[in-house]
Length: 395
Ligand code: PLP
Image (tube, rainbow, N blue to C red):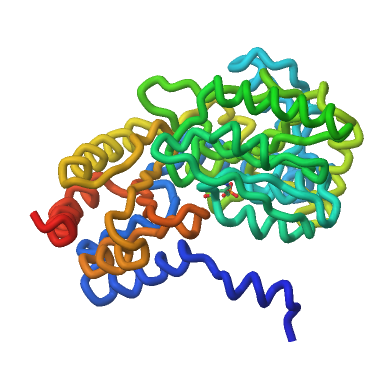
């Protein structure tokens, strides 16, 4: 007999995973090359060669009792120092190893951060559209999800609505920029304003409101767009970073939390994150992967491959009559559904195009296209998108 809480979580399911499974089923029927699966954010650019070289070298050179042994919950000091130096170099931060906790990807990091700060019943504000798993992570700590409604067509968060969402029961805000599912990068003005509101509200309620910045897509920005570094504006920031997309290592489960020393209750907060890492059962981030990212901390994925996909897909879909905010980062496009969302998802599927409805991101009336696929697949899918448009717009 499973718990009531799990029953609810399982009932809501994951539309993304369900569509991915559907893609595999259709590929068996029609052939892989005839199914255009845009459902999952699995990188299509392989990890840089240097990552594989680093892993081989580590396996051959590091003492196995160290490499495969337990370690401190926050991870190797040398890895944390390499991460801190990288952030200092790029953003003029003033981090040391003490500001970094290595995590089991962004998902692990977010769960650790929430576990460390949220009391049961406290509110965590999220901004729609958002990664649906946040609902589960917040439920894990018995927190309450407060949703700021979406602000189309730009999807820059509306600061009036944001301010209204903050109250004396707010413990944290989660933001994600570059954003999954819109590909929008929140601009500096918006983030400065958001920080001002949080500072004002913290004073008004005599509380500490943490801003958790979920950043798995930080390195995926196009057209020289800058992704603002949130601690520049707000000290009570917890950065949740991941190498899942930036080094194409989603199955290896490696990332980190970065917490500025100026954050309220800094030392206790970092200690709580270490304990949360342990008691959530992660114990520590994977040893081999920590040492690998330490060696490859300055490596970059080939963003130009995603950019090529973005440009072809965006220009083609616009030409066919679809409306979409031009993505600035990540590898997603959020297209306005010209008809009722579930009908559009079903119609697209009848052309073997697999998309995820905006409902999964708390933003009905849209579909997400994950364009982290091969360029050839994008090219091959275009005639089907065109036919879909012709059917819907009657051209
Ligand atoms: N946050 C967002 C916005 C994501 O899109 C994802 C994965 O797709 C995650 C977190 C989880 O990332 P990770 O694989 O690093 O746990």
